[in-house]
Amino acid sequence: MRVIIATRTCEFAIDIALQEPVLEIKHKIEQLHGVPVALQTLSVSGWELMDGLDMEDYPIVTEGTRIDLMTKHIEHYPLARCSKIQIIIKFSAKQISIEVDRTETVGSLKEKIHIIEGTPIKRMILYFSGIEMEEEFRNLSEYGVREFSEIIVFLKALNRTRDQPPVRKLNVVVQTSSSLLNSACIPLELRDMDTVHELRQLLLTRKILPMDDYLFIHKQRIMRDNCSLRWHGVEEGDSLYIFRGTVSRNGF
Image (cartoon, rainbow, N blue to C red; front, side, top):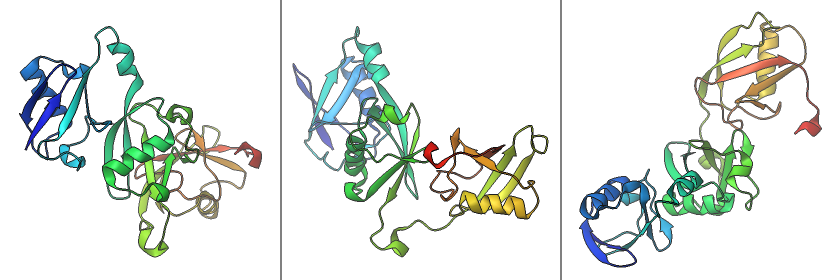
């Protein structure tokens, strides 16, 4: 299909395909008009077209659509680039990569996901490193989101049996500290709905660990005893670390 690329001073038409990546379109513009890909920002009706997506991800783009082309001034480019990061949005059955601004809020990220995937904003729950991103007006950077961070999307269930992702088996590696079992690595098969408490009881029952108080760590965060591995964002092949000790409830 043919679309119109509009700059501040001129307009020109190019042919694109629905499955053509946004980045490929930027390369076409560079070849035709000499604007470096790194300096281009494409948008439709105020929504930026992100490099990690194809044109079919933007149903608002049809034959004759006007796509605005903004170019960053070369002096400001290093600063502008630093403000943009690529992050991974993970759903139960797939994942996508999108570009966001470091100062973007949780609420605006949900709006982008809604535009791209059609996911209802009111049903959306976002998790990063096992923590729910529940404050809509907080910046992503306040939650520690960085380049290539993974944010998991869950849906609030209307019909729990229909909307909840099926239980999955996970193969994980439990690693103990040097003071326990000489830094042993213990492979285990668990369910993603198993809680940390159930994991603890399994290790104690099998006498893999001596009776004591332990902390479980996943991706440098203390895991909550009554929360599932799924809640903590544990994936296939992840490592869980065990240390002796306890944490007060106020620590959470």
